[in-house]
Structures are given as C-alpha cells and as structure tokens.
Image 1: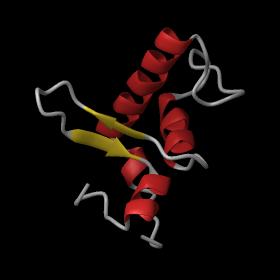
Image 2: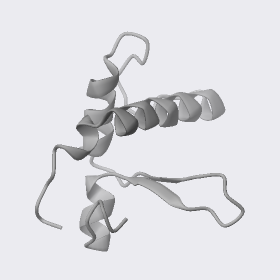
Image 3: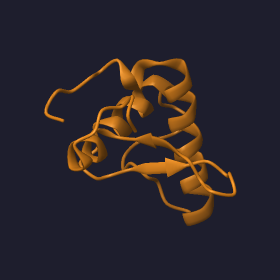
Image 4: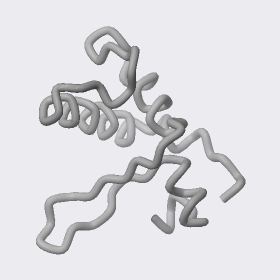
Length: 87
C-alpha cells in the first residue's frame, strides 16, 4: 500500500516483537539484522522503527503447526499490496 502507517511500529506489542526478532537473528547468525544498530544501547522503539522502515522485506511467523504470519514491515505491506490489519 502506498499509505504508510507509522502507528504500526509504535505499538508496545510490535516494539517487543521487533526486539525479539533482532535478538533471535543475532543469536542464530552472529550478525546484526540492522547494521550500525547496537541492540543493548538502542531504545526498543527505535529498533522497531528501523525494522518497519528498513529497505528490505522482513516477515515473521509464529511457532504454530501451520505457522501464522505475525509481522511484516512496510516493504512487505507494499509488495503484497496489503494492509497491516489484513496481514
């Protein structure tokens, strides 16, 4: 969607999820998902904003037997031409 909704990355649930995604990525790959961003020194809301506005597609899903998508950044929303609510 061409309409960008900044409120998405500002919700507490999304902020915590983004922090967990970054920590998990760093744990498993030994690399940072967002270069030049120190996870221990950066405010969680800033991490959430960076991920939502990142120039790459980022999508995640839960651990269900049939995984359910639980996050997509703005690139995903634009590529799929879908709203956050519909994702």
